[in-house]
Amino acid sequence: MSTDQTLLHQVHIPAFSGGGAEVREGQRVKVIAVQGKQVGDLFAFVLGSRDEYLSPGNTMGKLRSIYPVLGEPFYSNKRNPLLLLEEDTVGVHDLLAPACDEYLYRDLGFDDHPSCSGNLVSTLARFEFEPDRLPDPHNLFQNTPVVDLDGRKEARESPAKPGDYVVLRALADLLVIVTACSVDVGVINGGAPSDLMLEVWV
Image 1 (cartoon, one colour):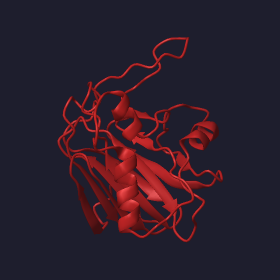
Image 2 (cartoon, rainbow, N blue to C red):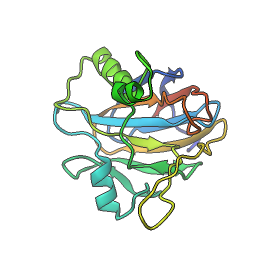
Image 3 (tube, rainbow, N blue to C red):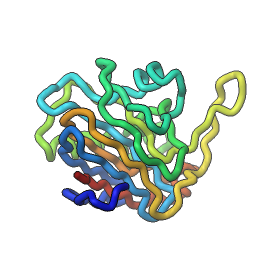
Image 4 (cartoon, one colour):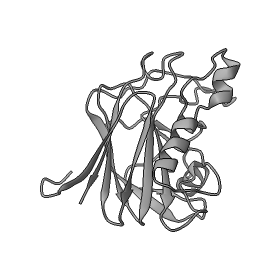
């Protein structure tokens, strides 16, 4: 990131929680894996609109790839580019997985477990923003590749090291929300969810 940019907002996102910031067109969003090995579920909503938000399905369709591409945008459900991936120190992300939710944890035998869906709802409420639905996330730093021709995916530990990050340039006025993935069963968050940092730069 250019050294002549100015930090506008810094949002600490503790493990098992979510945070967000309003971002204006042309500003840059930096998502940092503070301790490493932590997945961040990324959501973005067009300000002033209840029905336009990031869509991993349309991102995959427009990119013709199941993975984000450096230098290419993330797209909305209306096929508009919303965020441009400008910097990426990890290079491993997931566009296929939905956010974890209460039903996943119920199936695993856990009641009242934090989830990315629940943390998304809580963060939206803090901003008094009510979209017409809850979209699926772009899963930053998540290492769940397709490993064979029958389409089987494999859950692997996030390769993000402490301080690794992505930088995305806003292509519209957005509410950007990131949740620190709450999965503490298995390896994707290194077995123990940790913190993320969300920064807005101009």
